[in-house]
Image (cartoon, rainbow, N blue to C red):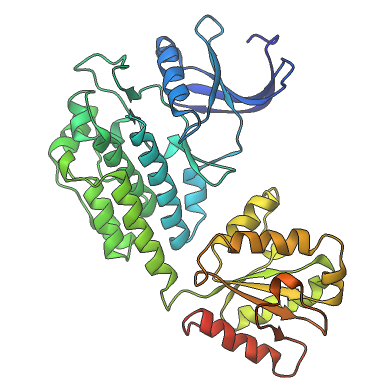
Length: 400
């Protein structure tokens, strides 16, 4: 590797035989980068992949900075914190899994709108970045306009995720990616692939001819609408599959329905300052006893997680923001400007009826100007907690 251009860090991983390594440019910019060193089988495709990445320009992908076709070959790309989609999905509940699936469908829709067909979509090629979006990391097999290095009649892509039309040849449309997306969801939700076989020939034959076995999906997914959506993505006929935008819309409807389900506990984000931690901790445990789902940083943030990113995600997925107020919190320098303001700014991105905001006074204190238009609850009074439960029940349409 040309150490005059990059200083590399040991943080590296492999994908499809290529190595991705974190580093910094040695120029005056010193930008953090991901450096991709290609699989030897695809070294001749380096320019093609760089052109695709340049066209996408960071949408559903990492932005391409530079590439080198001469040894040592590489593509340098913008740095984002990346989490493997498969890992995050496995650690998530049903509603979060729906949201993650939609995040990927949005990225697929964006990619297709820009005229790019990945032809190698699979869970291992899906990542979540620190901006809250999904990126596909490998575009070495992608089709973009007239730019296609794959010769007619040659098969490309990961075998188990290959659409029937891709199994017949590389000249495919966006529906081929939808098929791979559907196979990925089938696998992630059920734990097994919809297409199996002992030999490559048998797998090819099953992709093209075998009827879909829905039994594992039926057992793993209780939502009939989600099962129907996944099955429609894996339809043998490309014309019968939904588009990425239609998938995104259907998942949005499923997420909205799930959020309003009476069986789901109400999510309550506890916004507070550090000086009130003990009182807020007691409130957290009391809410849990009453079968709500409060979110408290010291209980729900894991070591190594990024504070700002996780707080933003927690607020976005909450039904209610409880702004815990005290003399210390309202006089603490920066509190209203930071902790509380951060949550309020995110809440205001939503319609007025999407997230309820309840000021909760822990003691007799002033209410900040930004909250004075809202009725508050005094938790220090004898019936304060019961009044809070009534307000939460209203916010949750009776789910308390």
